[in-house]
Length: 49
Image (cartoon, rainbow, N blue to C red; front, side):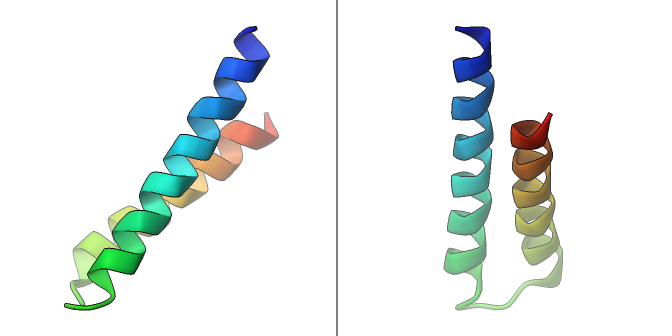
């Protein structure tokens, strides 16, 4: 069950990061774009471990 929870959290992080990126590509803000990239990266690392 813990493994499924980790995968779910990872997918949520990736989804959140992609959502932030898609919303913020309209008014381009460098620091918010960087936050989105970091969230996606953390989600991918979370899924890989």
